[in-house]
Length: 94
Image (cartoon, rainbow, N blue to C red; front, side, top):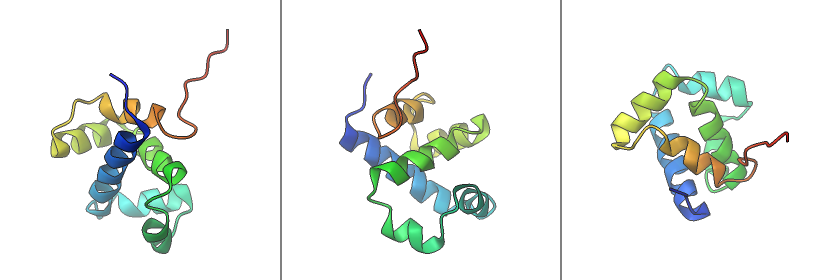
């Protein structure tokens, strides 16, 4: 399955919304990304920022599982959505 850019942004917005509800995890995202709470509001429509949300989410399998279970999504969907956003292309070294 491939995600369109629009579908990928929608999934990433769901991930951002889920992240906002995670009181212990949200400060970790803010610290790791350098984003401020204002950035969350102003950059929520920015495909590159949404890609960073998915990059962060995919840093830990537990977070992926929790998000996907909350949204009733297969576990590979964040990765598929990330590939459709800017900077998400897989590197091929050969």
